Image (cartoon, rainbow, N blue to C red; front, side, top):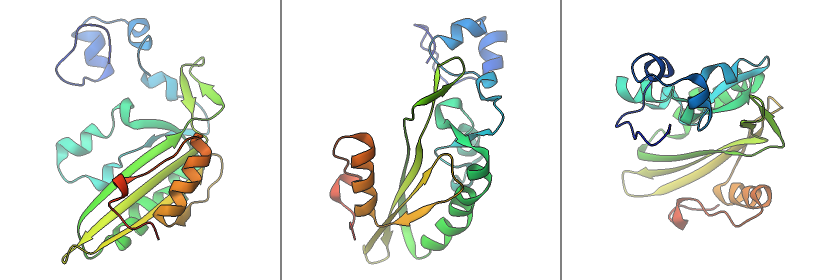
Length: 179
């Protein structure tokens, strides 16, 4: 993300500074830095959860700041964690393949001197293919300042996101059941 150098691989902040000789100010011009998330009451909320990955490389990749949003600590460690680590595995039993889309609705507040948006909502949608190509789908959404996750149909999630984003939202290109 940084500059015109087009590094071939994502690098840790320390590697950018020590090996590629970027300054923190140069990095901050185009992306978040680790210190941006040193805010009481907020965690680095993963969009693609570490626990949903199988390989070591995939797990490591989830810790990049491009996969992170400022998430309320009580939500991240509470109900969102329960949804990701306990409810998702239960819901995906019998699925041969599960597709997941996770996102964040931009909020009205910022951290890091106004450089990083604090989302108003965190959401996730899943579409499951079974052995006989039967599909099931569902969604979940949480306000980023409450420790509550609402589970709903894919269609209901799309309606809610359409209102929150202010434009039509269609997930999975209509390939999964809305009910």
